[in-house]
Each structure stands twice: as structure tokens, then as C-alpha cells.
Picture 1 (cartoon, rainbow, N blue to C red):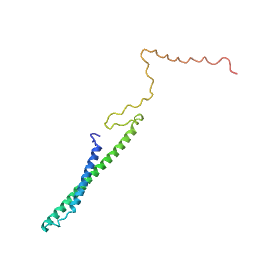
Picture 2 (cartoon, rainbow, N blue to C red):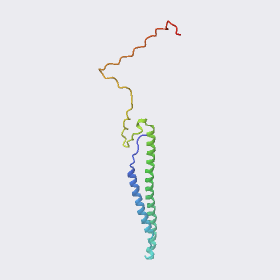
Picture 3 (spheres, rainbow, N blue to C red):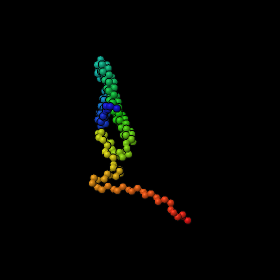
Length: 150
């Protein structure tokens, strides 16, 4: 996969909180506007006021609902991204060589640390040291014994 997308979860959470706050404010606004009445006004003005008020109540209610939907969508996105990341992290760790499984994967993309040292082949002899003598080949057997065994 080429390209990609980086998502800062804290920014998404903050945006969700802002949208939620806007929804709460707008919700209170349309409710207060809905509670007003044109009754103390002149009948000609009261009719125009009612038409105006109803349109504004409907529009502010619609914007409040949309704001709440944005807030919930952002919260849902963060939850989904975190779940996907956790599953991808687990799958990635499962395919790492055993020595790397206890290491942490750097979210900044740095390579993982080297695996813990394991016993390997003997070190090569130092230059100038005496080589070990090669073992001598086994000597041939002299053959069967001249005297039979009892």
C-alpha cells in the first residue's frame, strides 16, 4: 500500500468535544426560541413572528442535530481507528521473529531494536594465536588375535 494517512486521535477527540458543545448550545437555543410566543404582539406582527420563529427553530434544530452527528462520527472514528491499530499491532507482533516479540514497535516508524544476543558459533581464533592441532586419524586395527578366546 502506498501513501497513507496519519490520524492524531487527540485532535479528533477535541473536535468531537467541540461539536458536542456546539450541539448542546444549539439544542438549548432552539428550545428557548420554541418557547417564545408572539401573543403579546399585534396580530399582524404575531403571524410574521410565528412564521419566522418556526423556520428558525427548524433550522437551528437541524444544525444542532448535524453537530451532534459530527461529534458522534468523530468519536466512532477514533474508536474504530484504535481497534484497527490494536489488531494490526497484534498481527504484526505475531509474525515477528521470537526475539523481537518483546520489543515495542515505535509509532514514529523507527526500526525495532536489535534482538537480544543468543549463543552463536564460537568466535574465530585471534590472529597470531597457535592453531589447535588436528586430531590424528585412528590407527588401523592389528587384526584378529592369534590366540582364540576361551
